[in-house]
Length: 201
Image 1 (cartoon, rainbow, N blue to C red):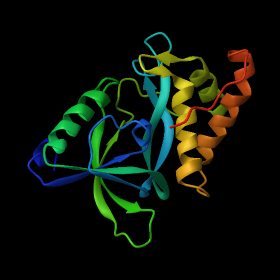
Image 2: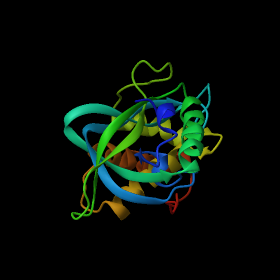
Image 3: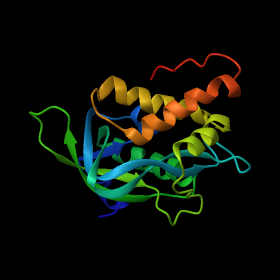
């Protein structure tokens, strides 16, 4: 089933694992923190609009299939007219950087007394024209530390995502995310010339 085929449904869950965890920018009924299995989050997708430009594309996260991995984030429930509005908004938001594919995934809420649910997620694949692929944490951090787009500095995106994980998913290890964060923070005295304040989501 494609997203456009479900606008007549009464309820839809949308899973966010990047900027959606702190900035959904669409109306929703409620949200839940939890995870999906079979995917790992990676800073492998380029961004030449929101967090970078054509000359200096930034890096944002996408999902890569990995049967042993899980990715934590936020699932938002949209109902009624919110469904069409949110899908319309996300289809534009995610298409700016070359487009994403949508997938259905099983989302497991953090609270033990809640059952898994089916959610829609947007994923940038290697077929995307601005897909950048793997690099070392130091290389990714250097790129993120110097890029800026229409909605702000690329490093803000990185720090907000790392802060979300620490605040709302305590005890969950995300070596990829945290290693890039550490490398980027180590570069800040050289890039900014002053103390970098971690933003609040």
